[in-house]
Amino acid sequence: MMILLCMAILFTFTEAGVIDKVINCIVIGNVNYEREILLNNVESPYQLVIDHDTNTLFFSYTARSDEVFKSAFINLKTNEFSVIPGIHGGFANAVNYHAHVVYLGGQDGIYQFDYNAKNATKLKITQDNIWQMFYKNGLYFTTYPEEKAYVYKGDELEEVAEVKDHRVMVIGVDNDGNLVYTNSSGIFFTDKETKQTTALSFHVANAITNDLVGNLYISTANGIYSVNATSKSLHELVKIDNIYGVAMENNENIIYSSENSIIRLKPSNKMCIDEKLYGKNVVDMK
Ligand SMILES: *[C@@H]1O[C@H](CO)[C@@H](O)[C@H](O)[C@H]1NC(C)=O
Ligand SMILES: *[C@@H]1O[C@H](CO)[C@@H](O)[C@H](O)[C@H]1NC(C)=O
Ligand SMILES: *[C@@H]1O[C@H](CO)[C@@H](O)[C@H](O)[C@H]1NC(C)=O
Image 1: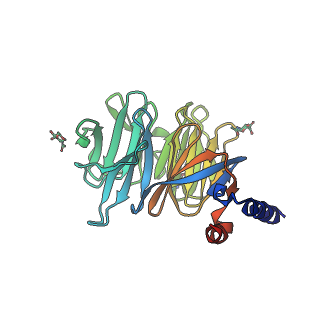
Image 2: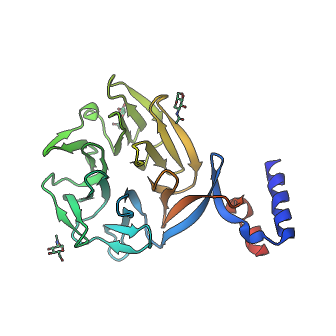
């Protein structure tokens, strides 16, 4: 029924000669989101994080030349792409939005991004191989291959007490200090007050991120979800195949990465036709 209706609309638009209004987009909730490619031909872009002050998206990818992880960034206004020199195997990224500090994790510890020199300087925090990082009133990070979670705060480094008996691959913290993390068993929520742990999903998250007001979002290989701390559950925003990571640009735009590109989803008032269903037809009719 739905498909028939869409066909009818498509037909009408074709008749009226305004087929170019039809775009490649996705419906999230009741809103149409237009897909805009920010960067193409970048291998396995992981761990997206945005410095909102400077509209810079930091991420890690696998360089084709030497098969090494590298940290890089794009300017979200100009889409200009740069690799950050000075890091050994840059894989993790986090931003302290308030203090405007960008942390980059490599295979031998944690670095700070220097905005003037556009390079990275090593910090004296750890020598561990960093898998993922998240900033919320402290720098949270996980290590590889140990899969342990630490928090660095006020010059002190300690294991995250609530999860020190478990493996943790990716961790995030909400405004109330509740932990959301993933390991090979699934995605979990640990309540800050009660210390109770709830399983949110038996899938594995590849990214946990927050928006400017501190709401948490998760991506798995097949979808993007928001975390509801009240109901201790995940709310599916959108299903997309082959997701590698996600970041919230502002209260409207979602940026995610796939196998070899970084894509922005932005609200659009144009008509929405899903490329998967109509891709061929739409292209043929142009
Ligand atoms: C970063 O760049 C500055 C200015 O070019 C240079 O002085 C500094 O040594 C560089 N730092 C590293 C760690 O490469
Ligand atoms: C993952 O975390 C959950 C919740 O803390 C725990 O029950 C489970 O044993 C952990 N899995 C691994 C492999 O550590
Ligand atoms: C979170 O869950 C609660 C309880 O089920 C619900 O009342 C609330 O609307 C949910 N919040 C969001 C943002 O969906």
